[in-house]
Image (cartoon, rainbow, N blue to C red; front, side, top):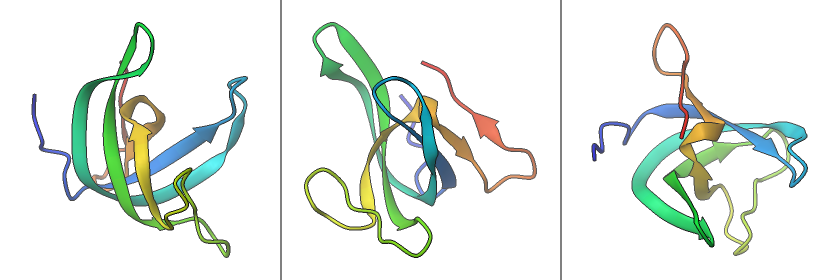
Length: 89
């Protein structure tokens, strides 16, 4: 496990339950969690993203907090570097 993504700027691609792309948001990784069970038998690596920018409307997570939330690494790309980097898991 490595926490080397903390502080990196990322773009998170948001999908509905059918897998249709809804749009994207940008923010900064503040924490990471590995092998989190998100459904019975399904684990993913997650990152806690803060300082989210989502256009004119504030991003609100499922707990009602604004401009922060947990997201799967597989739905992100790092935008700090010269070449975007995508994840899989």
